[in-house]
Amino acid sequence: MSRVSITYENHIAFVRLTRADKMNAVDQEMIDAVIAAGNEVAASDARCVVLSGEGKAFCAGIDISGLSGMVGKDPAELLMPRSHGNGTTNQWQEVAMVWSRMDIPVIAAIHGACFGAGLQLALGADIRIAAPDAKFAVMEMKWGIVPDMGGMVLLPKLVRSDVLRRLTYTAEPIGTAQAERWGLVTEVAEDPLAAATALAEVIAGKSPSAVRAAKRLISLAEVAGEAAVLEAESREQAALLGKPHQMEVVAAEFGKRTAVFK
Image 1: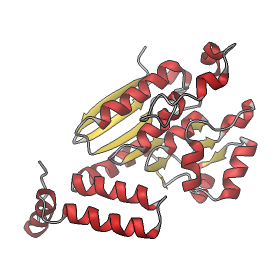
Image 2: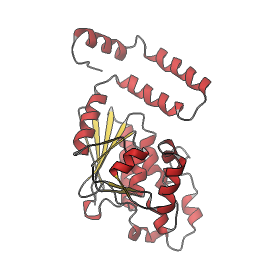
Image 3: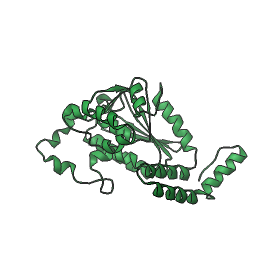
Image 4: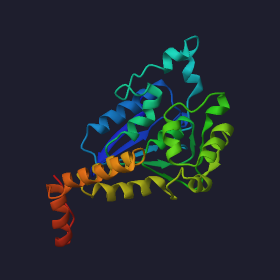
């Protein structure tokens, strides 16, 4: 049974979790499908991605009943091999990190439950737009484990240390208003998919090479020192100025028309 659908429209890749009967809970098939979707989109000519879920929830987390294959096996042998991400992630981590590494912007449209694995998947996006009644939780402590799907790479970039600790230690769900105050949610919309689509259309209309350069630069700026970031600013700008995409932006601006990129 398919777990993910991918459609392309106006240079936007729409990636949708399709296990609505299980609130898009993550089982092995979902893991495989999400990673495959990420790899497909990365190789496409899409300029932006919208992640969403069918049914009542974005993603309710790991399907515990689907993890029976791990019983009796050495957890270290399952978790420690770096099998994905050019030797940096295991398969569970790749579910989120394949989107975080994407060279184009990724927008998550969130409704209903966004728990555990679902939250970590959403954290892999650049931007998260949530319905007013969505719920969020770092759920792993409920099962006596810790976030292990990239959450500890992605969460510290968004929330204060005390917030991260409270969310992780308690596994308590929070609402959208609190999630926005704490930095988990970028903005709130009654129809998050429509809002994410509208935003993706804006981004897809910008210079594709400039948007990719901006994402590279922002990602570096979050982790590198001042000298490295300043050098990267200059390098990225030099590679854009006077090139076809940038010249088309200028021509379209002066011509009061929509830019068309080849």
